[in-house]
Structure formats: structure tokens, C-alpha cells
Image (cartoon, rainbow, N blue to C red):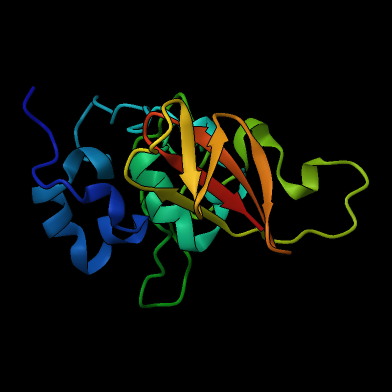
Length: 185
């Protein structure tokens, strides 16, 4: 079976681009991602081996959604292929087109708000009174001059160390070998 995506950026496109005016292009270039390969679903896997290190909001925040769908599909539970949206005939009566295939490993459906990993969205946590968003920044630079540590802002930190950066951010040395630091509001 040779049904596959022919361009590298299919997962960076919104689900809605699989249908409507973009459907012919999507069928030609992104058939696997859009669910147009009969009996074949895209792999439910993460491109990055450190997806589990990201906060749950990274999976659901609109500004990170394309990044999450491209790099951390399995961790973020974003494996479902898009479902054709309902159509409204010109006479005003409602009808729906046949849905596309679904991904058996995931539970996210196109048009639904993705849930945090493990299904812990704000509504699933008893006693939730308010929710907010946190910004996270991933910094990666040249190797530290001290083996086994991350270098950030002129200081060396051991892998796993956490520290405050000013009043707004808490940072963590995620990978000393790659000098990768994650700072969260």
C-alpha cells in the first residue's frame, strides 16, 4: 500500500484544511494525515523523546497546538484523523456527510477540545474554581563548559535542578547533554 503523505508539513495544517476548498490538495499531498487512505491510519507516535516533560497546557493551548500535533501527538492524545464537518444543504435542512475514519488509539475528535494527557482537563478535576494558562519557554544552547550540567544565564545547573528566574519563571535543567532548559510562568 503506497498511500502516504508526500510533504513533510501535513501535521502543521489545521484539520479543517483536509476538507472544503483544500480537500483536493489534501487528498494529493496529505492523504494519510487527513484519513483518506482506506484501512490505513497515521502512526500514533511522538517525534520527540521528551514530550512527557511538557506541561499539559502545551497540548491544548491554541498557540502550541500545531507544534503539539507535529511533535507530541501520542503524549498529547492528538492522534485522531479529522472528521468531515457537517454540511448544510442549500435548502436549509440539516444533513451530515459520512464521517471519515477514526483513530482507535486516541479519543480526540476533530472539533472537540483536546484534553490534557490522562484526560485531566479543568472540568475533570473536582473542586476546580478557576483555571489559567501558563507560558513555557524551551531554551537550548551550546554545551555547557561544565560536563553534566546546563548553563543558563551564566550559571551552571545539574540535570533535574529547578530554580527561580526573576519573579515570573521557574526553570528546570531538562537535559544536560543538550543544554536544554524549560522555564514556566
